[in-house]
Picture 1 (cartoon, rainbow, N blue to C red):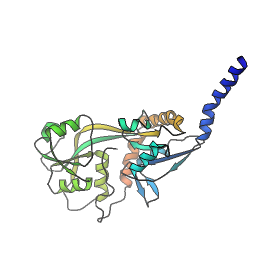
Picture 2 (cartoon, rainbow, N blue to C red):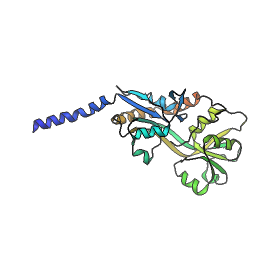
Picture 3 (cartoon, one colour):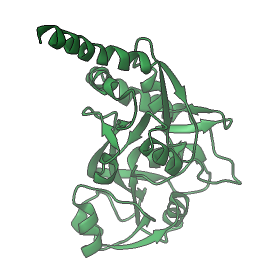
Picture 4 (cartoon, one colour):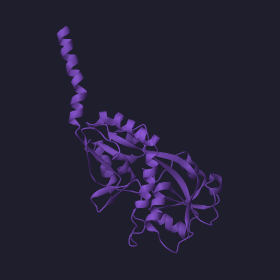
Length: 269
């Protein structure tokens, strides 16, 4: 009996080692149209703050392999265990069914009110917004209790894209537009259109959201999540993600006039 117990104990002790050997290759993906967190350059490689942050997380003996797919497909592949790691997305109950998220956030993703400089709005006071016309993008949600307040008290128009909303704001067809701060700043920097009034992000944010890294619950690399989380926590403590976001904003290419607003996408991921 003691011999059998010893054998079983030895077999169990090999489990983690075998798992680590099996995870010599980690496949990851991110949203290909989510600047400044991530975008695709030359249709072949990711750029952006998410990629720069991942490059600072070393996993001994593990090769990280990027794959580029439309965001909805990448999430479906992670659900099936075909992608191990997804970068920079919000925690939602539906996603938690098939993804295990880092406890430490990867980046802040505050939601703000954008308005024209010199316009009627100076602050993002919720009560004050009731007097004006706003804009939101189709399918967006904002957290922090703002969604319910918007539905009950605010007058907003829904447009298909961020591009349309910023155009409406510039033309005075709406007085404000609610979006992710960094996503909106990326849009404004990438277009740099001339002849339009300056657009500003108002304070305070309507909600203070965060985005995280997450691993497929079917991934054979899932045991590495605590190590990724530990390294991510230290990088956040050093202020690295905030610095990488600013660097990504500065390095963004200008959008062409034939595709105004690209890269542009929805603020909540």
